Image (cartoon, rainbow, N blue to C red):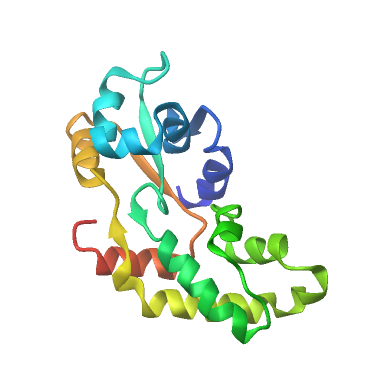
Length: 178
C-alpha cells in the first residue's frame, strides 16, 4: 500500500525488499549487478526470467526517476534556473552526487547552512519549473517491454519515488505509454 512506499524506497538499495509479502529484487540492485547500460540495451525482463545473482524473482520494485523515466536533465535544468534567483549555482556534477534525494535533502546537502532559509521557496520554484517542462520527460530504454513481460509472467510490480505525487500524476498524464 501507499503507506509503505517510504519504507520500500529506503530499502530499495539493498538486495531484497519485502513488498506486499513478496521478496523483491530492487531495480537499484539490478543496476548495480547488471549495469544501467546492459539493463537498457538487453531489457530488464530477460534477466528477471532467469533471476539475478542466484535469486528467484518474485516481484520487482522500480524507482521512477532514472529507471522508468529519464528526468535527470530536467532536474538539472530546474536547479540551474532556480539557483541564480536565490543566490546559488549548482553544477550537473554537484547534482549527480545528490541523485535520489528529495529537493529539500539535495539543498541541505549542497548549500551552506547559512543559506538553508531559502530552501523551501527554492524547492517550490524548482517544482514549478519541473511542472512547466514535464513534457520533456521520456521513458528509458525498454521499460515498456520489460513491464509487459513482467505482467505476462504475473510478476508483481511496484514503483517508488521521492517525487511529489503531483509530479508523478503529471508524468503519467504526459507520457502516454505509461
